[in-house]
Length: 166
Image (cartoon, rainbow, N blue to C red):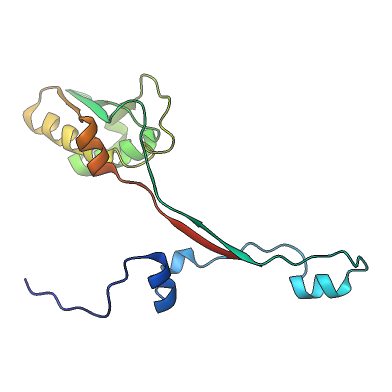
C-alpha cells in the first residue's frame, strides 16, 4: 500500500482552523434575538458591553470506576448480553449487526452503572461485539473484562475543544 500526502499534517485544532479543515457537522452557531451589532446599537443602556474571546480545553481521559466488561450468553431465543454500558440500545443494535441476529433476539442488560462519566456511552461496543460474535459462533457463554491498561489504550476520551465567542 502506498500513501500520498494530500497536504500538510494537521495535528492540532489551531492547524485545522488555519487550514480551514472542518467536519461539516461541526459548523454551527448559537444565536438568539437580534444580531449583536444591531442589539447594541438599539440599546438605550449605555452600560452595554460586547465581549469577544476564545476558549480552549484539552482532551480528557475517561477514567471510570469499572473497566469495560461484557458477558454474552447464547440461548435458543437469541443472545443475552450483560455489559457495563451507558447505552444499552446502541449496544443492542451493534451486537445484532455484528452477529447477524435481529435486534429483537438480542437482550442487553446492565446490572448497575455508576461513575461512567460518559466514557461508556458508545466506546464499549467493540468489546461487546467481539464477545457476542464469539458466543454465537461457539454457542457458549463468553466474558471479556478489559484490564485498566487495555481499557485506557482502546477507549479514548473526550476530544480537545476550541471556541471563539463574540
